[in-house]
Length: 434
Ligand SMILES: *[C@@H]1O[C@H](CO)[C@@H](O)[C@H](O)[C@H]1NC(C)=O
Ligand SMILES: *[C@@H]1O[C@H](CO)[C@@H](O)[C@H](O)[C@H]1NC(C)=O
Ligand SMILES: *[C@@H]1O[C@H](CO)[C@@H](O)[C@H](O)[C@H]1NC(C)=O
Ligand SMILES: *[C@@H]1O[C@H](CO)[C@@H](O)[C@H](O)[C@H]1NC(C)=O
Image (cartoon, rainbow, N blue to C red; front, side, top):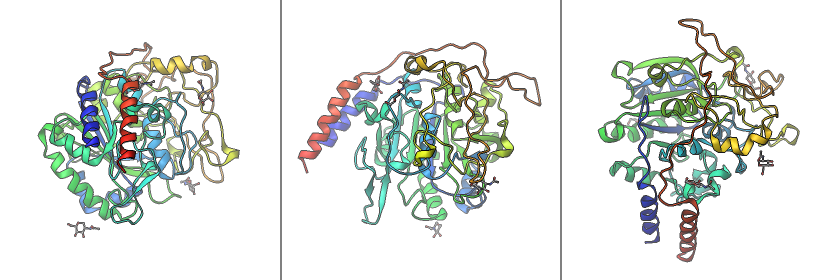
């Protein structure tokens, strides 16, 4: 009963969100599976079936090992040196894609199979069969950011996979959604075949749902590869009706990482950027081909390995700990816009500090256990270097010269404080009902 009340309120709170058409797609869903090498996953029978219906990205690299930093990176534009799956939080002054969406009122949600309730902050939940974890915090990219977990209305957007099926039935799937299946269905505690079977059965009705698929782009990806000592290449596959029919069943050999999710979203919706590794990351060609955005391989492409984490704030080795770097406030992202106004306000006092984010698309990693080849290089904050693209007209990639920061209209019906209160009330009622 209380649950129903909560859902009614949550639905009311988000029902009036703006609908913002994109340049290449109007909705983006991303589904995350676990721990498979490109070579093996691309040869799985079920995956091959799906590959025929989409665009296979053949040069897509995860960032490091193990899982958690890859999820964290995909929404915040860095993993801050993280090299573990343990409990941690990221300070409130670090922004995410959620802040970018809110500049335009684009509705977003995360759906997590097995999560005990909306906005649940624990480490995980026990599987229905009692054997091990179902939902895990380490596979939730949003929950560890204080800018999300300290805000009731944002927490309320982190829901279960049952909510997703309800939203599908009601045709109210938001314009951006991250989906993490549980530890069985994502393959973590099972196998490549098991997860591919689940994916096939999850996607088949969705791909046939014309309402939900209308100008929708789906990214099916793995978080990281299985074999740690080889470069971290994974299968990522684009699906959905936003893909032109002639591109279905083709491959795209452009270099991508999970940061390409951020740059693609910025490019599609003219969003501001985070001023971190999101800037300079290649935009998925299905979007770039429509917007005219020029992609290029990272300057250090030959050395990319992405098997170890560089030092940083979240490294569990005290000798490898460093402060969170300031964003580069002079960068312009793939949306043609500078750093988000809110980020600028928080970090402008550090505009004179060095930063590893240079907008060049260089891929930083922890090198190998013997060398520190791609360790971040700190430099003064400056606009991205102009890139000469070999073929075609030579225009700078993403290095748009006009920097403007814009904050669109907000379409919030209930403000954060009120929503936090409702959320707290819900928590108390749930507690009392036990
Ligand atoms: C996957 O599905 C196929 C075909 O339905 C079935 O033969 C196979 O046993 C399934 N594999 C797993 C691991 O569930
Ligand atoms: C960001 O937050 C951290 C942790 O609270 C703090 O140490 C740091 O000074 C803050 N930086 C800025 C620029 O606000
Ligand atoms: C990638 O990094 C891992 C971990 O340090 C190392 O074992 C491996 O040799 C590296 N591979 C290449 C191709 O550099
Ligand atoms: C909390 O989230 C809401 C909606 O997501 C947003 O409008 C509000 O600005 C956030 N509040 C804070 C203090 O960040």
